Amino acid sequence: MAQSLELLLIQFLMPDNDARRQAEEQIRRLARDPQVVPALVHHLRTAKTPNVRQLAAVLLRKKITSHWPKLPQHGKASLKEALIDSITLDHRSFLNRLFPIHWVI
Image 1 (cartoon, one colour):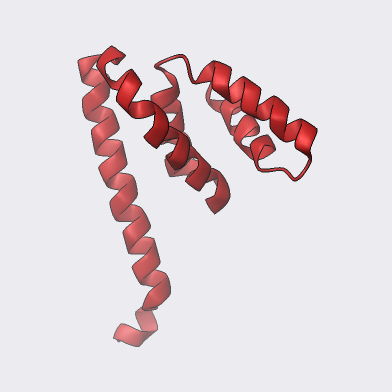
Image 2 (cartoon, rainbow, N blue to C red; image 1 turned 180 degrees about the horizontal axis):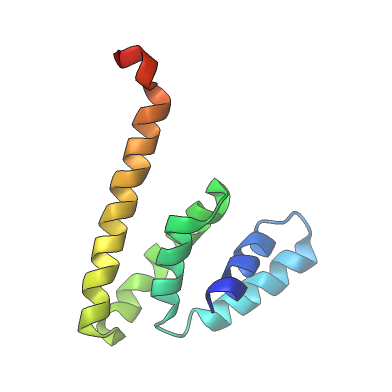
């Protein structure tokens, strides 16, 4: 699911209306499966482009509440940890861009 989801997220962001509509429909179909939550967390953390990471975060926000009770307990702990890590990494990245290391020295 992970690789096909990434391609759909990229397609969802394309300016072509037909491609975007197809991607929306397929994402909607995939989003019925609780395993979309770990896949979206994965793309939130690893996608190369900020737009794809942002779209993964938006979709995750919409789906996590309904799918959370259906996920296994051990998976929930690792998802929580991954989300916290991604927040801190993104925050550090922002601070590094804001205050380059040569400014501190």
